Length: 323
Image (cartoon, rainbow, N blue to C red; front, top):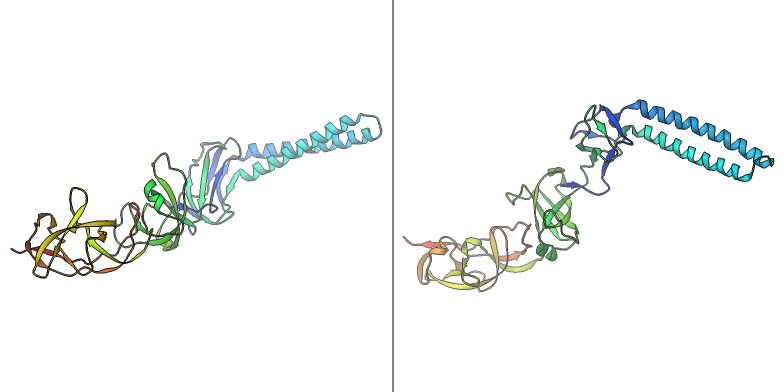
């Protein structure tokens, strides 16, 4: 989980300094304007006062030079140089004032402290992020897809999100694909996809590990069988179909997609046929078996390889050898 772009703020020291005070801890809830980290003040105060003094002197010098130039006592270029010096002094004064304001980092948004690198008494550098604040009400899930799966998914596809690194239990949130990266991440060798959460946002946390299933297509009246019913052959898979007399016969099938629990059969099996689902590896042709429930055909969603949306378990026939 990560904060949505535009709903996260990172702050650093305005110049090399030291941390003198901490107002928050990691995970703290803050409001816009709340102080987060304070740096040593004397250096910023002195710089601001020095810049103000320089600005006052530059204003007087520019006014005097301009007056003498208008009277013809000094050349015009001296007046122009004095005006340039005044502009630089004003810029330095503005920067010094801004640095003094930033000597105490304040949250620009309502949110939660999601990173805190400041240590009391430690040095701070402008290149180092001291504190980060994220809006927990605007978070996205980042799924890493294989290049093949990324080519099948598209913006707008529905997504089911599960807690952890696998699809265990019911989905805790749902969303849609908001963006799919055009480049492969060099670290994971996968393609990042940003998922905008549409429901269940209160059940997820920033930094939480999630497993997602993306529904890439929808087909009506498909046959789903449990993976235990599939028996590998040399070039594909087969299932054992049980006739009305309880005799099992092997039949090759074609698979259109699969989940962690079931497979979508596109050819070789009709709705209502009984199949062996328990002990299929040990069944031979013409084996007498006991039949159970019949498979159901219905609307099923074939999925991208990983991550995949969770499928409702199909109810195929079950069978086992008679003792």
